[in-house]
Length: 110
Length: 113
Image (cartoon, rainbow over all chains, first blue to last red; front, side, top):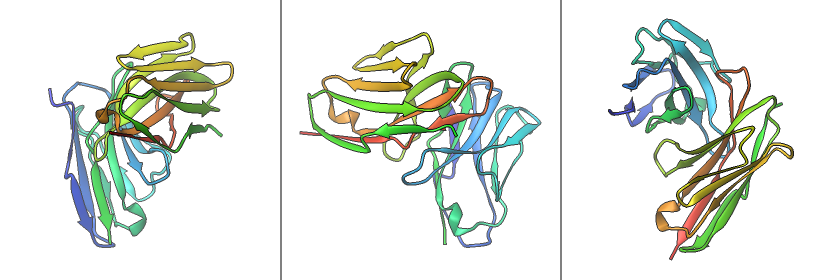
């Protein structure tokens, strides 16, 4: 039981490049979400999903896309990276009473 | 606007000493409050979750308290260890909003010899 896994752990992009951050969970949780964590700020919700085929926007969705084709996977796509997207990204999945976070992806956009 | 404020921002204590971290919130209607521990370079890990009716919950050397009337919570760490060095994040959930968790900015604790 690996919990929530994320890849890559580190990534450097140039402005305008696109990429996908991968997230997978093996706990059969319906609810999954993506957060970004910036210095001096609490985690902010980017997008979330309440089940396969269902996604919705969080607090800071601009510049990001998500899809949920399976219960296990919830990738986050950056369409055209900008320096403002430099951050640490966390994927999480939630059971009824608990939320489990992945180890994070540190993204730098030059 | 829902907010969670934590204090102090950072704290340095000697190994073996106790400490208390504070969390004040304005989230409404209140559902539950969670404390997470986040080691450097890792994702947050849950320590406790408290609902409206609970005013104390322990997890080993960690004890959380909740005063729903004053909208305050504290996390008390007893007999601190070097491995307690981390950021501690207070998170409050509002009723009826499956997606909406409000995160505090955390308290960074350093335990030294």
